[in-house]
Length: 152
Image (cartoon, rainbow, N blue to C red; front, side, top):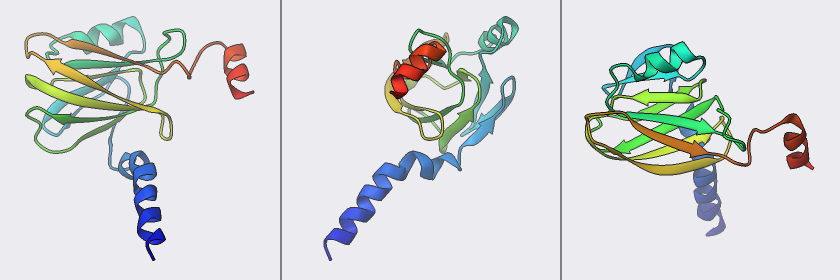
């Protein structure tokens, strides 16, 4: 009977990104939404969109990059800590997610895609300027040849 609780625990740990992903607020590229009381903007596609993402932002800009530093879209982000009011879970199709977080220290967990790898970084938001956080997934992206060799 001890096997069953262990299996359930292992499933919950393994499924955690999938379990919360359907609760994430979807923010389309170029759109703004309020998530946990925080103005959130999904961007990063095109120069104009990148400039718009930076105007008036005081929190954190999370950028997802791949093997050669190229931007990757389809990110899931969970932010905890600081002065958040509620759960901050977002799905952004673009490579940039801008969140106007109040000053504080936050844990930013990012998944590259629905079932992709994840990383957690710490963001120190000072409330005066946008903090740039780059989360690199070197195992993703690259040229088509590099992607094929990664599959072999």
